[in-house]
Image (cartoon, rainbow, N blue to C red; front, side, top):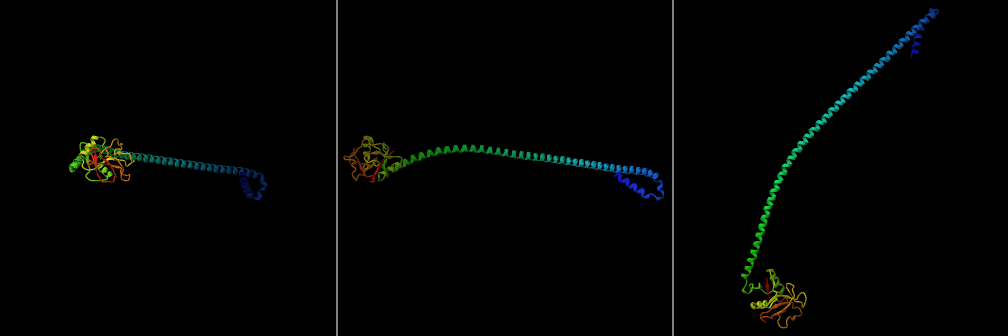
Length: 283
């Protein structure tokens, strides 16, 4: 760049030289050299000034950018701090609100718990009272049932004819003729069953107050020829009429009657179970 500037200055001075002064070229060349040196110095100074100006501009720009960055950083830092403060404030407010809500809910639930516990205690006490009342009513019910049963027995006894009254052996006869099985059902509905006669004394006693044939609790309906009482005990000793049991009617005389008109002791006879007789019951 210095070379280009010198050439320009030299050409300028060459164009300015009048023809009449060429004999003095050496002197003038010297002067030109001096002037070229000054021009070069001037050019160099200008270049240095320009460089300094550029350097100052760059430094100023850098300083400006640095200051702007610092300003932006400070603003950013301040914004971050404000944001953090806002977050902390919101968290604090949220914690206070939640704590207050939880405290309120806890107090409400505690109150409800106390109310429910009181209600449970009341219901428990009421339950115990009701259980006591139920027990008392159950006892009264049993007593009333016992009285009703006793009164029913008294009514039945009082309402029966003389021949249907209980005997000292706990015996009574039905009030109408039925088959053997229906007569047994009649006895069972009244808390007894057809009579079992296992002693001579009992046989004589029953015969003494009967005036007609009755069913007794003896049959071989389950196994032909194997006589059993209604309690499933086997017959050990019978009070049979002569020739009985003979299974006379086609082999199906499976139920036993007592006929007091035939004999005072041995008066049993086998009949078809469908025959109609009154039954003598034993309770």
